[in-house]
Figure 1: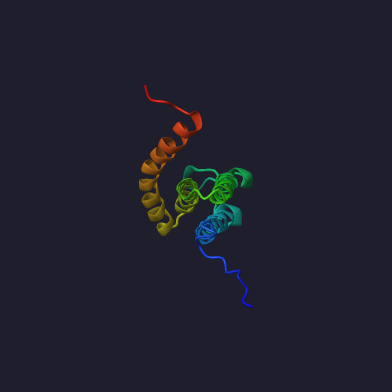
Figure 2: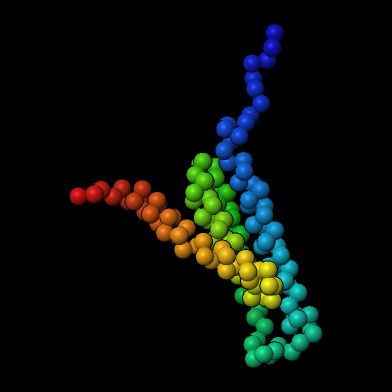
Length: 142
């Protein structure tokens, strides 16, 4: 008579909220990439020695953003194992890198976000090591 199958819920797929969080982080990475590509020294508006600094090469300039994308991919992989703690920590580190790059390129909001996320990074780094190292090494107390 009736179909006994039910629609999947959040309980069946706990990794589902990871996608909007990762998408927001990717928006931050794209904003930092756009700011990197729109640098005045790349557009020819300012000389390359503006304020005594040299405009880095493009691969050197976008390398932190590539690392940030890699951290998002690792975080999404962790989300499939139903581990929200490590997922959030890797997304946090990715956001720290992207917002720092955005802030260094002149964005006031990017720098403020960087300082906020950097304040959260210390406890998150401790939590990551506290949870992952004993579990991976199989440490025993004496």
